[in-house]
Every structure is written in C-alpha cells, then in structure tokens.
Amino acid sequence: MVLNFSEQGTPMLGLAKKRIWKYNFMKSSYDAVIIGGGLHGLATAYYLAKEHGMNDVAILEKRFIGFGGAGRNTAIVRANQRTQYNVPLYKEALDLWPVLTRELDFNLMFNNCGNLNLLHSEAAMKTARMNISTAQFHGVESHLLDAKQTKEMEPALNISEDMTYPIHGAMYHPPGGVVRHDAVVWGLAKGATKLGVHIHQQTEATAIHTENGKISGVSTSGGRINTPRVLVSAGGYSAGIIFRMLGVKLPISVLTIQAMVTQPLKPLFNHVVSSGAYHAYANQTLKGEIATGAHMDPWPNYTTQTTAYYIKHQAEALSEFLPCLRGVKFMRIWGGLADMTPDMAPIMDGNDPVEGFYMDCGWGYFGFKSCSVVGKYMAEFMAEGNCPGILKPFHLRRCEQHRLMGETAALVNYSPDN
Amino acid sequence: MALTLTCPVCGKRNGYEFRYGGEDKGPRPAEKGLTPRSWCDYVHMNKCVAGIQKEWWYHKDGCGSWFTTHRDTVRNLEVNEPEAPK
Image (cartoon, rainbow over all chains, first blue to last red; front, side, top):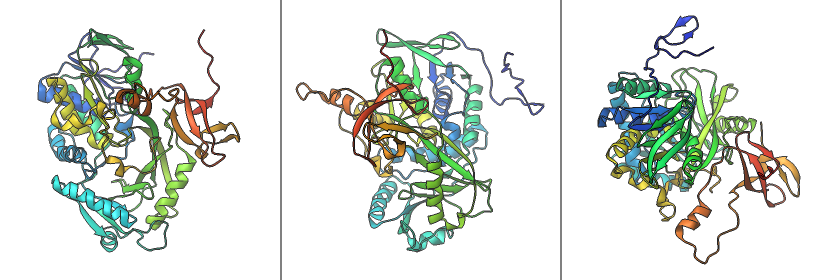
C-alpha cells in the first residue's frame, strides 16, 4: 500500500481529518535546505520566509515533524540562565511567544506561571544572587525568596529540616512558564508552509555535497536537491550527521534524557518547581498531570530507553520536596536525546569550514525554550550571510580558543564532561 | 534495558557502577608541536557515532580500573570488537 499524504489528509478514527499544513512534492533545487523538521528547523524556515523573503526552502525530516525533541521536552520556558550571552537570547525567546501566537493565528497556550528554582544550601543561595543580578541587569524579572516566602508561594512544598536537602529558599522567575510544545510544531508548520516552505517528512538526508569549498546540494532518500545553503538543526542527531557528512567533529555528547507524568490530580501547585540538588523539576499540566524530569544516563547513546533506576530516583526526589505526591502513580515515561556541550551552551555557526553550511546544535535540554529566537536569528544569518551579534558568542571555535561559557551552574553531575 | 559492562577485573557488572570516559581517541598527542586546535580536538571533539564505537570506562563503584570496550550506541549494548574490514 502506498501512503497518500494528500491534502485530504489520512483517515483517522474513521474521520477524514484535513491537515493544517500544506503538502508539496519535492523539487530538484531550493534556495535553502534544512535538515531536521524539529522546532529549530521549522522556526528558521518560518522566519526565512517571513522576514527575509526566502520562501524557496525545504525542510527534510527523516521521521515526522514533532517526533524528536519537539514532542519529548517538558515544555518549560524561562530566561534565568547564568551568563550575559545566554540571558538576552532566552529573554527574547520568552518575549516572542505572545507575538508568535498572534502571527501564526494558533494558540500556543503560553502559560507564564513562573518558575521556582529551589535552593538547598547557602552556596546555592549565593549563586542564585549572582544569577538574579545578571537577570535584573538584562531586564529579566527574577527575585530571591527565603524558605518562608517559598512556602507561601507554593504551599505543597516541604520546608522542614527532615529531608535530605532542606530548602533554604528559591529563585523566583515570574515571566517563565510552559508553552504547549505540540502547538508550536503545528503552528510553525502551518505558518511556514503558508509562506511557501516545503516540509518533506519520511525523507532522510543521506549526504551533503560541496564544490570548491561551497555547499552545492543534498542527497536524500527522495532524490538529489541542489542548494547553496544547508542548515543542520536535527537536535541530538546533528553532531553525528555533521561528522558523517562533512567530517567536522563537534564538542558534543548525545545522552538520553527521560521525563514522566503522574496520573491527573486536582490543582495542586501553580509554578514550575525545580531543584538542582534533587535533580528534578515538576509542574502540573493543564490536564492535571505532574510532568517531571529529568534524568540522564551519563553515557552517550541514541536510544530513547527509559529506566527503572530513574523512576526510583524521581519517586524519591519528588516525595521529599513535594510530600503530598507520595502514593501518586506515574502514568507514562519517555525518553529523548540531549546533545550536551562542555559549557552547556549551544553551537550556532555558519560558513565555517564550508561556505553555505550552517549548524544549530548542542542545545542539550534547552532546545525547546530557545526555538523561537534561534529561528529568527539563524534565518537572518542564512539570508544575510553574516552572523547576527546575538549569536556570535556561540561559535564552534570557542573551545579551541579556551572561551567556554560559564553556564555550567545550570549543570548537575550529569554529563560525560564533568 | 539497562546497560551492563564487562570490567577486566570484576567481570560483567551493572552499567551504573561505571563512569563513561569518552570516545577512544588514541594516545595523548605529543606536547611538541601541539596547537590549541589539535589539543581541543583531543579533549573536546567527538564523532558521535550512531553504531559501534570504542570507548573508555572507569569502574568507579568497583575495582577502579580504567579500560576500553566496544558499545553499540544505537542499541546501548556492549558488543564484541568488530572485525577489521578486509
């Protein structure tokens, strides 16, 4: 049987559902080809077409859009990172959600409920003061709370001394929250295809071709495409693709990251609560489930395996700082890929070592919260050929220049690199 | 399915007893003629192979041995060393 991805859509539950984005046949050439139909690829294509008049763009997706990190993240957005390079980027990403909701005419369900980062030692309180100063300097709202104020904010929290890591306070970041990740996939796919972008699902890129140091085309499972520009934004698969197709090695390790949800509960807490010491975060979704992550087995692999080890860890952590969750059942668990860099900052670079080649990877577990702003600036980079100032610090050569970023305060002991 | 690894001293053990030590990149480059780029290549850069790779492990919760083994990163399983192509 031949699958027919026509505009009539595929029959589902006996009903013919019309797809919200347009299907096109593959052409033999495009102005730009994007490998990876995740949120970064979709957003870049959308902004290429919308802001730069470059609508002759193809997105190649090996599986289907929303299959990878786009549908596996825990939908949290925030701008309380550590360094002066990262904070402005994530701030603009936050500011873009309401704008995109209007532009795409699609409800992205941005719920800016605020984030509470629990702090479990005086050292952590001190680090938080530094992060808060950075945030405030960049115009991002962020406050320090003591334990009592934290409890007032989130009464379900355990602030007693009778736990492994007693809560000393919290870093409160009101503008963060959650965005419906699937809605972002659909909204961007709709917006991009409306402007002429082609999305080719079940189409794998098999080779990137160069001529005289310039990009000349891409081979795919659906045929050869000629193009002067290629962006690899394939999430956890990017580093492997870039090495295999262009021989460029990256400072990346690909790890499996896991998350899970409990059974749905009545409204219980209102913020995204996270804890570095317990290495767990949790928020209650609009459906009532407690969505929680995020363990990584600290060795590279490309599976999306989930582990009993992690379920135990998560149950122990949550039932300490949110004791009301004792006895609640986990309902689903899943895994996705996180491409970790040594400094917890992404790699966005272009025209090096091949003209017309762009990469957007190394996001680790920050790929979702950054997709809107990265799409905007990677599109500018690809259309103009010059790296926008806001992306410049994230270039690949920073490792050999010993200019690693100090974002590792965000990191717990979960990477092969530390 | 959980990872198990074969320690040269302790035998087959639970993967969580070990610490991953990186892709095998051959011997440490000589100091003479070392450039920031070649050092960075040795320290930071990875091939991120989807398939079988040779890699370092440390038996942190065991005998403390450092050793290399082969693992299929797509299946997350330790495998025998692949035969060299003829």
